[in-house]
Length: 190
Image 1 (cartoon, rainbow, N blue to C red):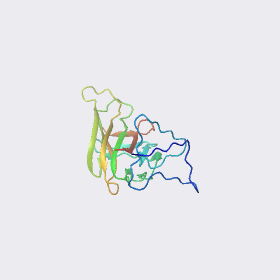
Image 2 (cartoon, one colour):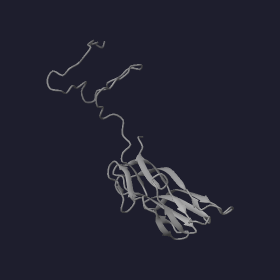
Image 3 (cartoon, helix red, strand yellow):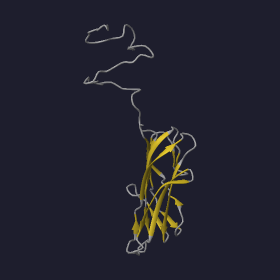
Image 4 (cartoon, rainbow, N blue to C red):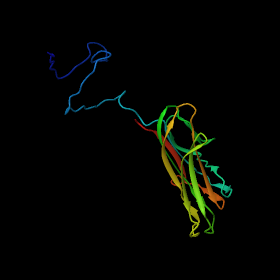
């Protein structure tokens, strides 16, 4: 028969560390019990890092017609673990796992409404993992297009990287702006 110890508070005999149980023990919190934390909780669950969000703060001009071109997301809003490179525009996470990733840009054909198509791809290493496009060919009245893509991708935590490329036809400008031309990812807790 299990013993029951009834107390209102446990304090360590000396120092500031209190240990409950021994390595290998299972500590059970019964159904209906509430755990209230007024301090710092460590070692529970997980976190969604590495994580980053970058955007383009300068227009990319002279984009060739129909050619996939790396989009230059050169300004970081945040980068939890320093895994995004603003020089190569690659995200290379240092922790293996599944990552939710997203990207968007504005293809701007200039003052005349002639944009026919625009597309975006997120690549893992050199292989597309998702793709999206806008198509104005049936009604070429658009001056700009706003393709965006998102997906979940497995990363090895060492050499895998993500990069985003875009195209437009005819050529023109990848417009900048923190709210329209951006790229980000974060590790999922699985």
